[in-house]
Length: 97
Image (cartoon, rainbow, N blue to C red; front, side, top):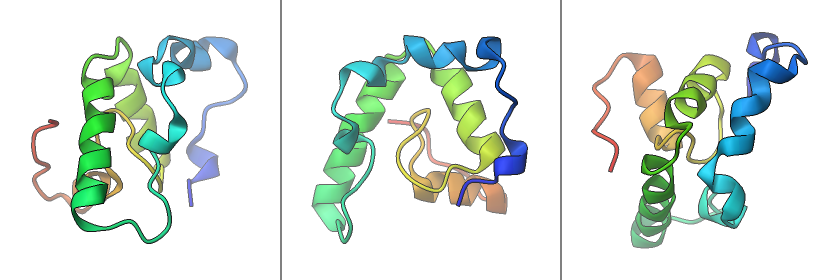
């Protein structure tokens, strides 16, 4: 679960970056896996999501937000759930691709 105490307050300037996200033009199902999705299907969907992220003008803001609030689900800022967990644990995170 996201750590709500880490979320910034309702100041529009803090959230405006989301309006410029490339993901707004893509089906959200690309960024969030269905229950039980594993293996090649999940890797393929994650790769598709990361391609969108890597071309996004707000990649950095998105990634920083996801790491700051510990987003538990989906691809954010070209990082999967597992990559974010590795980051929190202090393990090397593979380059976004």
